[in-house]
Image (cartoon, rainbow, N blue to C red; front, side, top):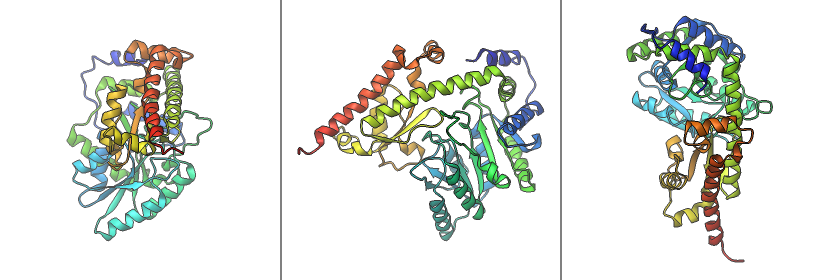
Amino acid sequence: MLPELSAVLAAAADRADAQPVGGAPALLEAACGYWTRRGLPCVPDRIAAGPGAPALLLAITAALAGEGADILVPRPCAAWWAPYARLLGRPVFHVPTPAESGGVPDPYALLETVRRVRAEGGDPRLLVLSVADDPTATVAPPELLHETVEAATAEGLHLVSDETWRDTLHAPHETVLLSPAEMWPDEVTVVTDLAGALLPAGWPAAVARFPATAAGRRLHARVLDVLTALGARLAAPVAAAACYALDEPPPVTERREATVRLHARVAAAAYSAVVAAGALARPPQAGRHLYADLAPLREPLAARGVGDAQELEDLLTARLGMPAPGGHRFGDDLGALRVRLATGPLLGGTDEERTESLASPAPLELPHVRGALVSLKSAFDDLRDDAQRWEAPR
């Protein structure tokens, strides 16, 4: 826990007043400053805050999709995206992503999906995407993003860009990240969950930036109506901490940079272990995850009774002693042997171990981190060895 954040939260702990729906003026001003520093200028009356990105996405989906509208998402996508559309009774259509990255649909697959849905009587209106992706930990190339956004806006879709992980680039001087709101500002709503890079996961707070158009003004008003109906307000102490974090004072930025460096090192080590065993994975570029495809190890996995993503999840969760959700939880086919591995559990099981990992100049050499990585490598090496025994003799 960052001490300065704890101090801000504690100083606001005796505030009994309720925060206004959508956020207090100070928080909205701080959010404007945050986005303006990233090339997305805005004004407070185009911002809404809520208790976490799920609440905001639910409100935005309810405001945009309405009765009879359909929602498009990439395949795979963040596990929490699709359930909010289904909660509203709206169908969700998954669109394949290209080979080089996740989070953003392939533009040709997007056009084909839109045409197919309309031919079947549907009405696609909303596309949710992410340039810094969970679960794949990749960053969409600007040229791909441009083609996809151009295709989506040409078909009349409104875009919601989840930019929760945009501040967690593993190589910020080498990786180019653009927001779709920089390309088509009139058709894109941006959502950022502060628990991604600025606040602890247990302090739910998120902000949304709406287009500076008449349609954006109406959408903002409808979202506030939904948040009001849900009673979705930020707790006053969390709002104070969010305001402080969005201003990005040195303690916050220094901690964020240190955390990103740590997760990048561990993700790179996990990636090396996974691909050395014969599995497939895109090199992690952002966030705190690794998305692996174990299709090349299907035969040895089948010998262990693993034939789909749920069984793979069960096997690796038990073997690694940490959650290893299968790709079916992110919209991938159940039969695909894909799994998301998080870097957080590899950093230690206690606050003391995690703090030691963060402060160490050589975190991979710490006993608890080294032990976790050895366990990961051993699990995948066993599968590789099994696969080699399955190979026909030459």
